Image (cartoon, rainbow, N blue to C red):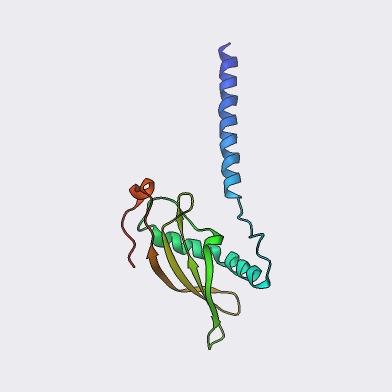
Length: 151
């Protein structure tokens, strides 16, 4: 009887670990979809450019806000805009993004502008990171705030 109970307990523990592993893997594999309402060539091009930069933008934003917040900061594709894009004299393309990072479920905490230079090989180089605006942090997240962002 004890052996059977021990065997059942072992199966339950294994099932719990398997379930948590599946949930964790599913969370990591989530991919944000493109906007189905983007239909013009310009809208689609903007979405594509943002998708190609979102990893770099997210890493820079997380590094910046880590000095000010303990909580998880989120950067969503739909909260990134292309402010301007142009070509330098040397032939590189410069692009400036406006980003509104979120804390918790869609609570904006600031507005930042990141400028990149892209050479003909596709190498992306961050030129500037400017924190432009602070938003009030909701009360339930204020305990996660280490300091106020400097403008």
